[in-house]
Length: 452
Image (cartoon, rainbow, N blue to C red):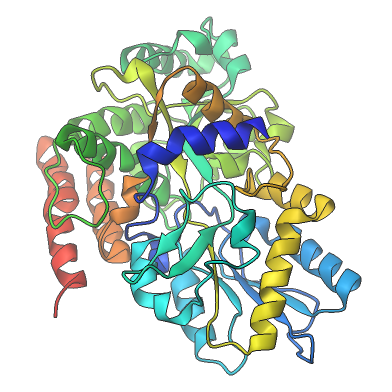
């Protein structure tokens, strides 16, 4: 349980109240999931004296495991469990449609403050329930303005730059020598300049289509928001009306490094379709921008690059040699308050079983990475162990300030559009459009989200 204790305790003070207090993909949920299509479990949604469970899943990459776990529970207890998985980027639409049905989900996701505002009235108070009693930290929970425990984290994750140490060494460098942006830039540019000789490039494709753009407009954008928080000396607890963009030059440092030292020409990024995950797994590039969910599951870096490591978003900020990974979650369970008492009880019993049953929790942890519950299986996720090592060495954790992006879908669409224009023609004038989308776009979407 060392990983869970260290990360939970080390991050709680820095991140409490900020991981979930924002506005992210779909209904305030999203960004980490990578592709996938909707699917339905083989068990029925049924109903009976014992109740039934309907889980509207937010993580497409975990669909296969959830179908297995649902069947295990039904086989063991006789309680019907249905899992429906929303395709990546469609959770808000799917949830809205499903909540209007007579057999609405009994278990769904409220991942940040935007979700609390929109869906909090649909959620029962989980305070004093047996599933809440299994939590080993409160750092990943959401409360509404009245103190109702609206949703509870069921896993947490990290994201950053993933490295293939073998390829770095083949190029004559060591991952351990990368400690800041300057050292990262040296290694990356050397590999890219010698790609023909080495047989691999520095970065995978930085596609800006819907299946990939969140890696930059959500995750990498976080470095600007995080350092802006730190400069102000106050971690965000609600979506600010404006941002300064003071650290956009640092975002530009890293973004430029990625797109200009990649397998794929920057002018080709808008259309996507280059499959950066496969490029990394096949050893075509030494670096990629991704998260801990790729360690296992469908992308499964652990099987193809077993010693892959995750390093921080080095971007040229002073003191970044003490940077850690971006750690947090948008994956938080909520139970439908409008479901029947039997279905609510059945759902809580199922949740409790998921985090206490040895076999079930092992399957879930292998997919999710880590679950913040007392009896859940210990994580074997190498990228989360990298987060633990950095934290144990005294490095700061970068909280998920990106969760606060206002009116997130529209905000990110504008970022994607501006970044695509810049990638096609990297002029100062086009970068000014990116700055406008970042800063002016934030104020515009904040006002739109809070109108009336």
